[in-house]
Image 1 (cartoon, rainbow, N blue to C red):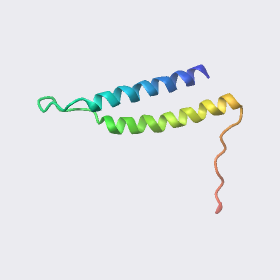
Image 2 (image 1 turned 120 degrees about the vertical axis):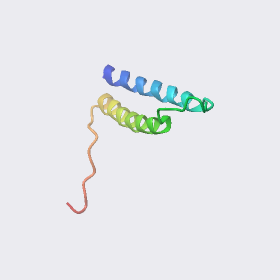
Image 3 (image 1 turned 90 degrees about the vertical axis):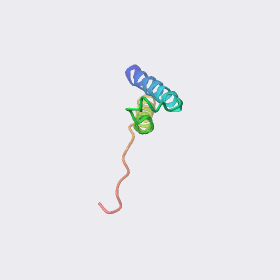
Length: 71
C-alpha cells in the first residue's frame, strides 16, 4: 500500500510541475517540446485510478465492474 501511496504522491508532483511549466510565458526562440496539457490529462486519469486502488486497499473491498444489461 505504501508503494501505491508513493505513486499517488509522485503523480501529484508531476501534475504540479506540468501546471507551472504550462503557465510560463512562451519564448518564441525556444518552442515547447512537451504538450503539458495532454500530460496533465493522462496523469489525472492515472491519479484517479491510483486513488481508487488506494481506497480499495484500505477498505479491503475490491472495486467491482458494472455488469452489462445486454450480456
